[in-house]
Length: 125
Image (tube, rainbow, N blue to C red):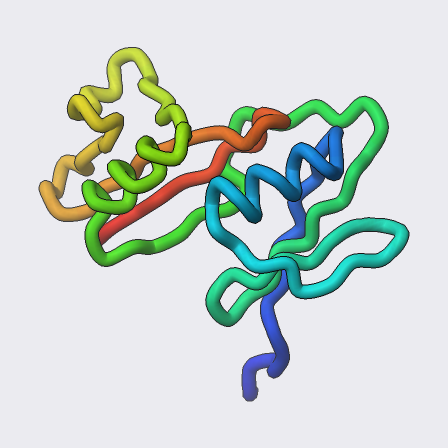
């Protein structure tokens, strides 16, 4: 069966639309694709992120979106220079940049949050 064709869209709920647009646009460097009365679409290299503001939104504890990057250490350093704080989870054994290495020694992940507390991630394998 052929895959569904079209541009993938991830939905991220936020509490403050303007604050989220500033973070995803200015801090993460995503480009505004379009906006309407309900939210904003940001271009994310072949996909779209739909930011939708919801009153009294509370983020969950698990990642909602991530980027698979070729050099996770370089990506973490770049985002840290832009003011992003990476989350250190007690007992995970992350390195000084906040990067966790899987037991296989190959897969790596680093986590950070947007201003609403949505967990985002960088990964490398």
